[in-house]
Image 1 (tube, protein in one colour):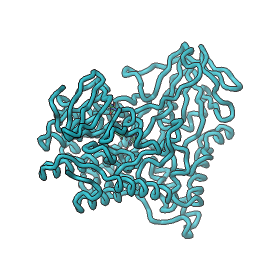
Image 2 (tube, protein in one colour):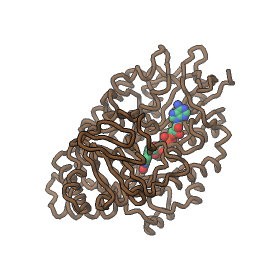
Image 3 (cartoon, protein in one colour):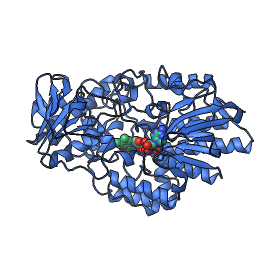
Image 4 (cartoon, protein in one colour):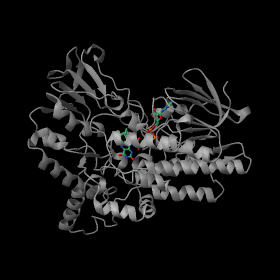
Length: 531
Ligand code: FAD
C-alpha cells in the first residue's frame, strides 16, 4: 500500500486544481488522480467544433488570485474551448500543480476504514492509496450517457462523440454527416460542421431554446469596468442567483407591466445576447403565464431566423417552460437551417429504428452517412460519483444511498460517508450557476472545514442524517416553487433511462447558498458531526 495522504482529490478540472492548491497552502499532503492525460476536465474532453463557454469569460475564470486575473487576457466575450484549455494549463503551470497530479489513472473505489478514520482509495492499476480526506472533483457533466442504438455495431462509417472529440480535430470536408441530439453541444457544433460537410442531417427528438451569443471582443465598457475594480466586479457576480452578473430585475410581468415595456425589455436583452433574457422579469421562472410571454417572444425570434415555417415550427420547444432546461447560447444555429446542405429530421414523427452498415434507418427513411456525431448528453451530477464504488461506514454505497435520487447535506457531504467531500455535488447550486464561482466557494469552504478540524485535533466530520434529510427537503421544496421540475431535463435525471427523478441542483441561488453555508459554519458546523 502507498503512503497515506491527507487529501486525495479525484479529477483535475478547475475544481481539482483549486482544491490541490488549497491543500498545499494548508501544508496538507495531497494527490490528485485524473483519468485524462491533461488538466482542464470539461475543456480537456469537449473539443467538438464550436465548443465554448456560455457565461462571459471575464466571470468564467478564477477570482482567487488578483495577479492571475490581471495577467490573463481573454480574446472574446465567450472563450472557445482551446482558450479555456490553455487557461487551465496556465493555472496548472503558474501554481506548479502538475507534480501532484497522476494522469491516465482512474479511481475505481473508495472504502471507509473506520480503524484509520480514513479512506482506502483504489486505482485502476490496482494500487490502493490511503487518504484521510477524499474530495470528489469529478465534474457534474463529465460522464457521457450510455445511450446506445440498435445496430450501432454494424455501422461502417465513423462515430464521434462530442464529449470525447479527437484531439487533432476532424475534417468533415465533402462528407455526409449525421448528428444525433440538439442539446448545447449540438447547437454549438451544428453551424460549424454545416460549413464544411457536403450534407448535414440533424436528428432531433426535443428542441431546445437557444439565444444568440453575439460573440466578439469583450465590449470596451465591460473591460474598463473590470479593470477599474475586479474585486467589486467579482463581488457583484457572487452576490447573485447565478454567480454572474445578469442584470436581474425585481419587476414582475404579472404586476401590470405594459406589453410594450415587456417587449422593449426582452428586445434589449436579446440584443445583448446570451443568458441575459433569463432574468428580465422576477416571475418568469415561477409563473407559467409570465413564462409563456418569454417563450412566445423566443418562438417569434426562431420564426424570424428560420425561413421554412415548418422547420421553424419543429425547432420551437413546446414541452417545457422557457429556462427549465439548460438554455443554449449559439452562433448562427437557427440560420444554419436555411442552408441547402442542412436537413432537420423530427424523431418524434419519424423515430430512429436502427443504425445500418451505411447509416441510419428511421421508421420512414434511410440515410447514408460517412460519419455520425453523437451529441447525446451526460449522466449529469451523479454519474461520475456513482461510477466509483464508494462504501461508507455501513458498507452501503453512495449509489445505494441515492436509490431514490441524490440526498446530500449542502451538496457537500453524504450521511454515512465521513471525510468525503463533493465539489458542486447534487444539492448545491452548481449547474444553475457560473460554475467557477461555485467551485471557488466550495473549495474554500471544504478547505476551511479541514483547517478547523486540524486546529481542533479532530479526526473526522460527517453530515448527520437529519441534516441531510432537511437539506434534501429544502432543495425539493425550493425547486417546487419554480417551474424547473416541469421539464424532462437532465437536471431531473430524465435523460438517463431508469435514473430516479429529482431536481438535482439547489435552486435557491448561489448567494443564498453561500449565506447558508456561512451560517452553518458560524454555528459551529451545524448539521455536521465532528469527532
Ligand atoms: P470537470 O471539468 O468535469 O472535471 C472533472 C474531472 O474529473 C475530469 O477531468 C474527469 O476526467 C475526472 N474524473 C471523473 N471521474 C474520475 C475518476 N473516477 N477517476 C479519475 N478522474 C475522474 N459551466 C459554466 O459555468 N458555464 C459554461 O458555459 C459551461 N459550459 C459547459 C460546456 C460543456 C460542453 C460542458 C460539458 C460543461 C460546461 N460547463 C459550463 C460546466 C463545466 O463542467 C464546469 O464549468 C467546470 O468546468 C467543471 O469543472 P470541474 O473540475 O468541477 O469538473
